[in-house]
Length: 77
Image (cartoon, rainbow, N blue to C red; front, side):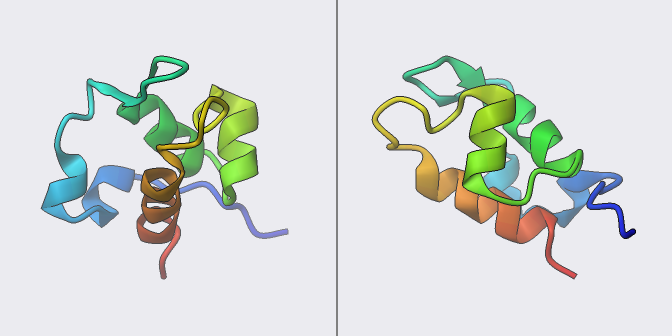
């Protein structure tokens, strides 16, 4: 079975997505961006999986597109 774990996820992100990694990505649930990145690097491949691991996107969903973009970048081949 193939692992979805990604080593060095920050290396896969464009510079703009590396900004503010110590700030809240999800304001509603106060989830910092690095927690979302770590969840994705540890195998979360959908917004729902990220939400289950971090609670990001569980408020009004305004950060959903950002989470989708992080998933796309980190899990791209």
